[in-house]
Image 1 (tube, helix red, strand yellow):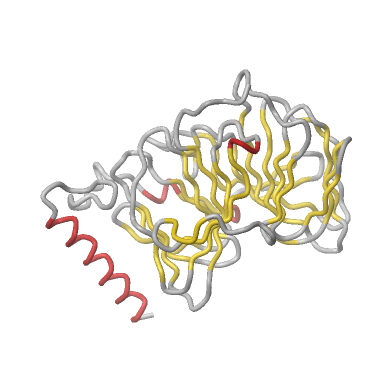
Image 2: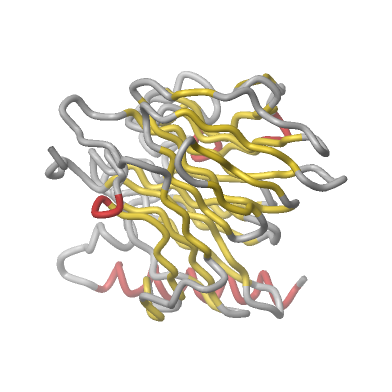
Amino acid sequence: MKKIWMFFCLTLMLLVSLAAISQTPDYSMLDPNPYNPKTDPDIDMYVGNWKESMPYHTHGSLVERDILTKGDPENPPARGAVLAYVNRFTYATLDAYASTTPITLKDEQEIFYIITGKGTISTGKTSADLYCGISILMPAKLEFSIQNTSDTPLTMYLIAEPVPEGFRVNDDMLVRNENTTPVSSSDAHWVGIVKSLFTTKDGLGTLESILTCQFDAMTFFHPHSHVKGTEEVWTTINDDIYVLIGKKIRHQLPGTAYLIPPDGKTPHANFNVSDRMINMFYFARYGDHELRK
């Protein structure tokens, strides 16, 4: 543990020193001003974990627990209430051998990322097997249902994104298998190994990117900030990491997500201080973009 904290201290001292000696501070990396609770965001308001949320039923028998909810990213009314563009981000569970009620989404579409268990998802046109690493983009106006085909819970992350007015949704669900998806980048923010799951070209309406990102043992991301209009969320899957948000460090346990305050001066960086590679789930909207008509 002493080695871990020494690593953090040396790293942050180096970054702060680089920002301080620059004639023009680079606010995309680190804000050189001292921490001020009156002006700096309360970063804990931007973090959510499904284990701290009450369960509720959707789709008949699907049990959801909120991770991040609709709110105000500039002044969150409650912890985790920071989403300006996505309707909700949850952890969902379907009990052993249970099935959801057939449902047709209206004015929103859902993205599922399977974490554990086995099952199937079906529309009137196609069906697909569900297991760890499978991701589904389910469009609006299409009836579907999910079935758990095993004796253990089927667990997943669920993103509900609104369908913009005039946007042309996909005709059927789109399935991606992270396990066989090729690496699209091996140096994202210095060390991230990215596998892209869905983009606007694939049928996302409000969001622009959904992906997973691995990074190796004892590495960390390039600290950077985001501006207003950006909605970027990082979620741990099965492992824990440490994360720099603003001028504080937090331990990010499995099932925890955070949104970067979009103020242009609050940096973030993920730290892997373990002895193994770690994988994270990510989704983002970067700004106004052209919609598919």
